[in-house]
Image (tube, rainbow, N blue to C red; front, top):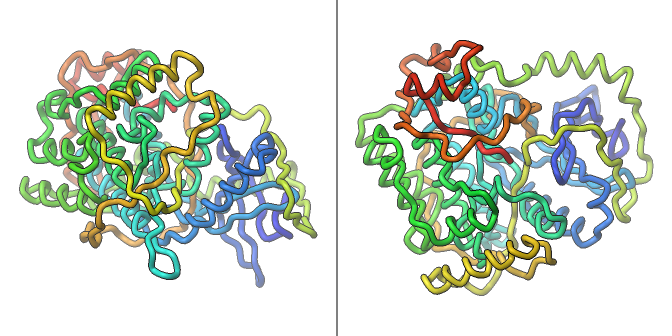
Length: 483
């Protein structure tokens, strides 16, 4: 089918989540121009909520202003009589979550030099988004609020990108009004976010630090049997250092990570750029060299977890003749969106992000008393219907501490490869692993030695459970989050 008067053509399904369905598509133009894109279409039941649709469109249009090689770009945002959809760059590659899941199944781990390269790319993209201003030069105070493995895409060009700015805040509304499961996302929430206090860019800094902790410690930081238990841990529990879990974590990296995990946002890094600079300094002090984009690209391709672009094109061409009959929309409607509800589609990795509009008032600082009250309030909410009531006007953005220019993170430009925005179909999610997973000391993977040989090591016999192989060989205990 075709959207917006034939400008976009849907080719095949990529994934479906709680809020939208993502298809591989083509952007069509004059003179035979075409470009592969990812088209995210909102589900029909959500299109019946005008307030939600308006917020979704406003925030997605704001996100479209972000232009950076480490951010998946939003190309177009539209509402017509077929529905509400966002057109994004298509990234050939895999999400960090898919990569970690694949490595876990192999009984292998992610080399530290590659993990840090990916992480620094992500921080560069985050900082660029946080620094976005309006035409008058005033800060827009964008906050992602869902920095997690499934929202970091690693392209076959060796460049990592943060995705889904402009979506997570809308999805958060679904979670509160439709009772969606939050367990997978709680682990990356900041204390102020979990306590439903005003948030700013430092909330994303905290979430990024959680991700770094997990990449080094090789296990989940926050675990629990219920949302209430996990929220209480986020808000009030003492955070162990990654080195206390995995002795192989270098002291310099351990210290950098722990500052990012400070529960008081005033003590954390003020910006993602500050975080990146501290990490760069630590790496240099260790005499360590980060993986090059070529090494990252080689590693990603070696895992075989993404569908090559040539196969997608071929499959789209074959299936398109039989299943995708073009339907031209001549008169787009500006009224309420109507979209076909997805059927028989497996839930994919949630693709979410958020843009928080600026507020004039500064957010409250986190104090011990406030944290305690937040825990009590959170547990009380969970005892009834967890965030089942209509959400109050909280988690609004609070202007962050003064920003600093982004340091040189040596982020390669993404212009040499076809770009895009939705990860390929994720593999079937393995069952949730028991907590804790690591009963023995996990080990940080050594830096990959050669760019052309960044393949996963510690292969296992197919008849042997992955966990058993990993433990016997001193391999990774990290279980990718099930979201």
